[in-house]
Image 1 (tube, rainbow, N blue to C red):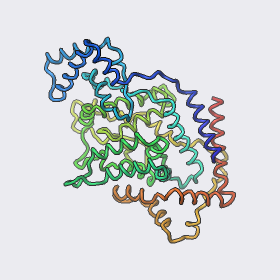
Image 2: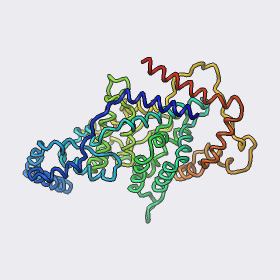
Image 3: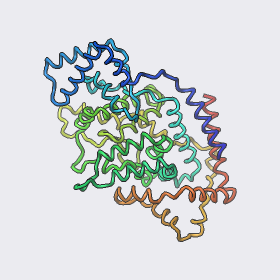
Image 4: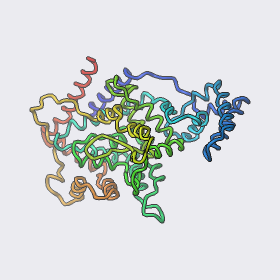
Length: 440
């Protein structure tokens, strides 16, 4: 298995280096702002724009004020660092940086947000996402076709990695705990905890939980409930209008930035084999995950499909119905996003389909039916709770500690020749994939 891990790492490193180019880093917007205030002309125009942004947040600008703001914005056109600056996702100064980015673009309309305010994803990050995808493929290929629950395995793997397990527990508590004096959760805390999880946990684990491939509704329900829908986006009094939802998002710099990043990196194209204009499903998944924990939090619409949408509708849109439907189609009819999610962990055709796959060797606890807590683990794992609080809480309680899981895995691989065929099958799959790409 060590050799398999090394082979996987070398394979992904080579393929990503061949498919991505190194781009020169952009200047951070806070650094560009510091440079601007050292120039009297730039400082004067920028301070005027800051005043315009503050006034616009309170009430619509008058005709004269808007004209002066446009003049100040035009004066900044010669200060290229301020106009070309970018921000870093998940950094401590992200929101301050985004404030500068949107200050010089304060009159930008809804249709002009398809340029991402964030730096391009680095080659290393794209490689990590691809490693996560390939690891999901290899893991799924070693399980029986009729009993796959990749979302359960992804949750267990997350629990074995300390940072992933602790941050996931943190957001589950934040999203299921009732706010003082209320019978509902604190959505702001829930969103903040979800963003911390997705920004600080490596994609190898976080994407495995979000995009795990499912072949049955039980697995699909676990995947859909990963972000605790009842707190993170659902409203008890029904779905809001999609245009209203987008309007609130555009007034929030973080949500507006994540939406722009999503539109930039998940722009569909009918002429691309991947369905994405920028030919990268990995960066599309990263941009999609960035919207989770914002006003525009999307999620799976059901337990038996990979279709995603926001929690909104177009009822009562009147003559704005086409605009509202366009907002819905950002997710529901996005071929790039759908292709990226479907490709995550998708299995290629097996060679020798007539040969049944090797059955996993059960641990001694299962074989002998011992009355320890593993029996409760198996029972809880195969039961989806009625409420999300029970489901999420139970999910964390049933993850066994690392030492016990490692012991079970070792006992399974020592159970005979059948258990020993699993690494060989995975290795054969990787060799076939490497050969296919090298021939291409």
